[in-house]
View 1 (cartoon, helix red, strand yellow):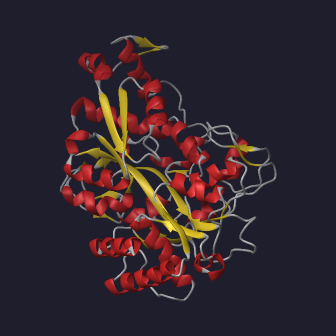
View 2: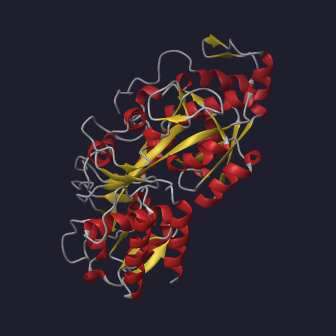
Length: 435
């Protein structure tokens, strides 16, 4: 976003164009250029490379696999797992993946395990278009930094080796290649809530007893609950992204009380569940993710991703290279990382689901000007806005709540995090769910 990429195609051959041609005919000419700079054996063997990407279904899916395999001279094979399995296999089964997609919040678990190798920043052609979130920790110089694990705290490495450390300063090396990010808040049914929703505290309001829901994933649901509890004046936190045992206890005790009073209709684990709850009117206010809101709206049901003064729970996802990857496979992975953003397809699919690409400007050549203005600039829709499946999610004149990309990402209440008391947090959260 810092740099306009309307001319990002660059004159002449791209390295990917060369590789695509090399896969078809080793040493053959591509357009008016001739393949140079790669050993013949490289060109002959690249078509046999398979990059195995593992991650969660939100960003590691069949659509990604199909798009990559249509464009690249090697194969990409994806495996989608639930978030906890991604972390477990990412640490203990490193022979089952080459590229891993996961939240930057989990880096304190992965990096000490030496699962990943640092990424050379200068090999990422799109780095000049990356969001300022990943170069300074702030969407704008005036933006809030936010509590919790701001991506800038963990995205840089201090050297090229697997023994390098994560550092909160710009270096020539990355722990991962930023993929996407977003700012989450409450989803509401404006036709059913009966009044203006203007605080996270409304999630806990007695008037929504039996019609509220929160996410069952502890790293998400507990932080959402903490924002609401603090807004309601029930608990005060030093850092909602890294609670003390006393703060965890206060959070859980309040949640158990609310649960026993019948306040919560459900605790959802997959965004599809949150969609069904909202479409059916079983809930009217709940923690929600952007694709879920889009899915509800695509079914003709009013749903708003509510902008609230306390701010957003923010998060980021990056792509990580297996520490064991080398040679031709490693070269292919870098080519894949460049395609991921330069082609614009992946970022466009994120944008049309309500997420943000880590290099937002790269999607401009794929989405329409009206979609760009609506999703990124926060302007009223100049035409009906369609999602990735062609469904109308906003009528002409409609406005996306929360404003522009910069307005949303300038107000992070807290970033997703792994707390120092992570094990205690999970144990107490499970106690709450089982009560």
